[in-house]
Amino acid sequence: MNMKMKVAISYLSLGSNIGDRLDYLRQATRLLNEHNAISVMKISSVYETTAWGLENQADFYNLALEIKTSLPPDELLSTCQDIEIKLARTREILWGPRTIDIDILLYENVKLSGQSLTIPHKYLLERSFVTIPLAEIAPDEQVKGVKISTVAKRHSKLESKCLKTAYKVEI
Ligand code: ADP
Ligand code: MG
Image 1 (spheres, rainbow, N blue to C red):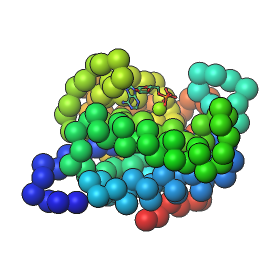
Image 2 (image 1 turned 90 degrees about the vertical axis):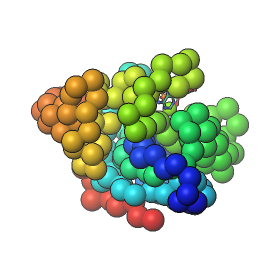
Image 3 (image 1 turned 60 degrees about the vertical axis):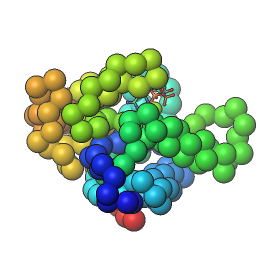
């Protein structure tokens, strides 16, 4: 990364519920870090979580990342989407379900509410599989006046499963 460029801190959520879920998280993390305008700074533990919204799906593996990037939010989103496509394609399931989901949770103090990009992420505070991993690497970040560690603590008492695994993703 060219450090003369303006660098932003951003937090991402990664999830996978098809195939070798851990390997997809690892590959996505590496591909992000290999991008010349992105450095992965922190990686949370890997959590096994119940699918949210649509039931009758396999459990997910989720983690949160802190990155430094010189990409503006829209280019960061398209980079994440390129990696999603790349990883889905290695499985050669043409119209099959996605193997990896990469969402932008936070980007500095930026607030955006466009059709293709909302920051902070629309459901950040509602999803335990987002708040619990994020609280590991960014406990003091605030969203809508709520501290991540506070909401994560509340979420960890709920029924929905979000269990820390022994797996590590490293770069
Ligand atoms: P989901 O992440 O809700 O499971 P998708 O990954 O298919 O579903 O994302 C649907 C759309 O959400 C994307 O086309 C993207 O444009 C939009 N989107 C809006 N805000 C964000 C964000 N903060 N991070 C990632 N995608 C976002
Ligand atoms: Mg997504």
